[in-house]
Length: 323
Picture 1 (cartoon, rainbow, N blue to C red):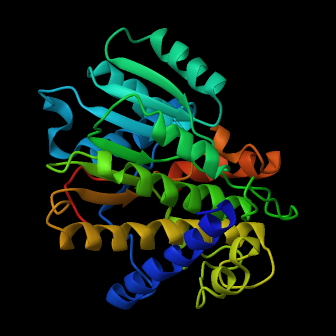
Picture 2 (cartoon, rainbow, N blue to C red; picture 1 turned 180 degrees about the vertical axis):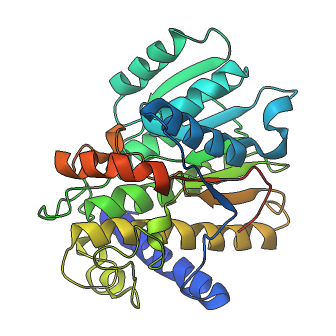
């Protein structure tokens, strides 16, 4: 299969999965999972650690505090934000963490920073640039483990809402390309390596996918239409619904893609005897503007939102809830 065919198939496969998810659960798939609002004077580190704790809850489930056997966990975007903090906490608990970052340099730097505070666990830095399907494929091929317990699809970005459209190496709109399509492909490649008995797939989503959430109400709400963008334009789409590019909506759409993907993935896992014991979850870590995630945003946005984060951060309660 040539690379153009792969890119086209990726879009079509996504569209097919979304139709199934929409058909089985409706277009408004509430990630209104059980959540708590932290209303206190919290600094950046507490915000990050709170998000990381929520991520660990989703990663390891009820056995979080008493994992008797070290697990092998792949985390994308593990060099900053909650990905970094979660990797650090996992290493503290003695697990093996494969640090999937945009460049190998960033991954090694993350490992070095963790080692400044943590001596336990195993850290394996690796390059996984989600803006390049070739990089994703190489990461999966060279994965230093024949079996993994948990795959955490955590990396993401939010481009400047007033900027022009940017594209990945393969020509996809950059926000959806990285936040969804790159992870969609990575999960496809790594699913055969996920432990069939008790394996987990965790997706870092966001409450902005929901038009009724505080963030989702701002600007144009998330909507995927009939997926005309994927079907009509293939890799050249600007927006999933076929409309003109809007940076803010592209991010919200990418998070809706994350939620629908997780719901449909869980349905397919349960329908297959070989994968029915694997659990797929997604969660919202809240708004953490002081991490590298908002590096493309206006400094004004980050300054204003940092105050809002105190009342808008939502962290999922520890549970084994399935979408």
